[in-house]
Length: 258
Image (cartoon, rainbow, N blue to C red; front, side, top):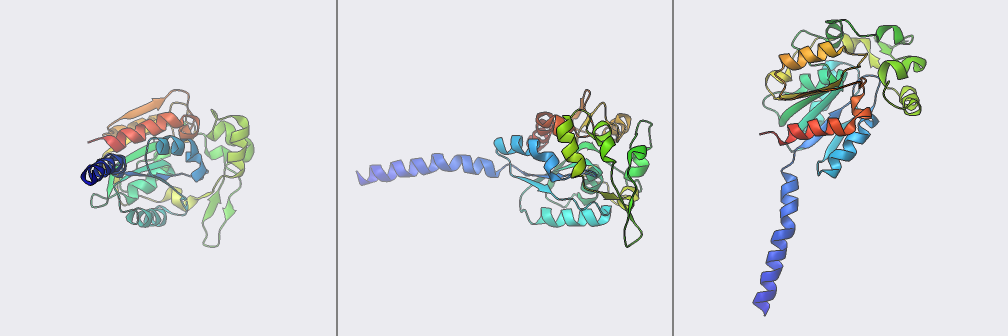
């Protein structure tokens, strides 16, 4: 009887351990927000990913400079000790591209309405590659910083139409009030690394984006040999807010790709 009890206990341990072991094989998803947003912009995506068993870290991107922001991101990633799917929105795409190298534990990059610059390119130069961005006239008076740089905001009255047209008005108003500024230095800083050249990438963006022209994102995804490019019809610049399930699906596609 003692043998039987021991056998059942061993069998139970085997079956209960399996899900935990399976969960450990999943990469950690690291989300990097862009300019005029914050980590809460990923809330809907986080809920979907966590429901599907993924560990998620939504980074508070400093939005100060590509070099400094990417260095901060790399320190976070190095402390995770797991494979990582690195996701960037808008200017956050420039940050993940700068941070991602072939000798890191990053297995995939996902660009969400994001810049994917090559070496020598900046977010600012890419946004003007094709016509369509209406961001500049909506910017508020810049805040002068001690180092000569300027903090940029979108005028709250113009935020909904410019940045988040497909988000309910009340939610967009809250986003406008809590927006994080980006420096002009960060937007104009040239990339020194293009992570998408060494690491597979995925892309999703909206057809009605007014910050980054959709034609620019199409061109960048093609140049990066994107494994999957999803265009969400009618979606604004914050496609992760208005269509979190679509964005989470692309992230999970990247996470499960062989």
